[in-house]
Length: 226
Ligand code: CA
Picture 1 (tube, rainbow, N blue to C red):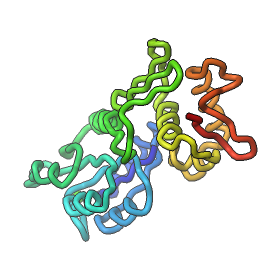
Picture 2: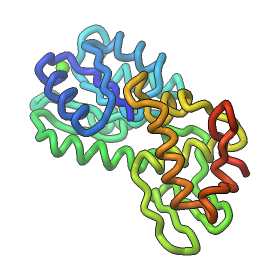
Picture 3: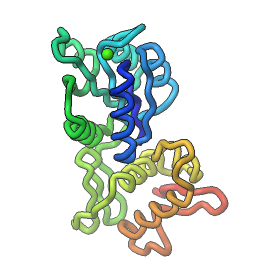
């Protein structure tokens, strides 16, 4: 998953980048509001961490501009202690949550997890629920059942499944899936995609060897057939 960190304190950028990368996120950072906005508009992220007091363009303005341009990525705003911040204003402008500096990284990670959990917002025309065969998926709660039994999916499996269903019928190459679902540019190999597809089939298909829904398109990639 990709995180954009818009923050002008070099030390905090380093610390947060390290910690987030250790948690498996791909992190990009920008040190002022203008370049942050530019990056946020030119790439897809799963989450944006946005400082309020920034050079060139403050966090409120960045947030407002992003929402005006229909970027619905969850935004977690960072504010410094003692800064007169208007939380109501920020929330009106479209921020999803706030954290006051200084904060414990563990607290930040908890907020991120909560935001990602409640964010089918990242997928604009997202459906709330979907079912195929004996499988039912509640996207809002991130719950999957098969024959009314809970199926445990990892975050990545769930994200991959969500993506395939949102784009059902379309064929995706492994590289496209890496880009769209994993968000890294080169890091994991296309083999990662195959492995996750295999796990999803194992968990969801009646006969994983002859998948009915999560299909291979030979010489190309995968599609969700529905
Ligand atoms: Ca700042």
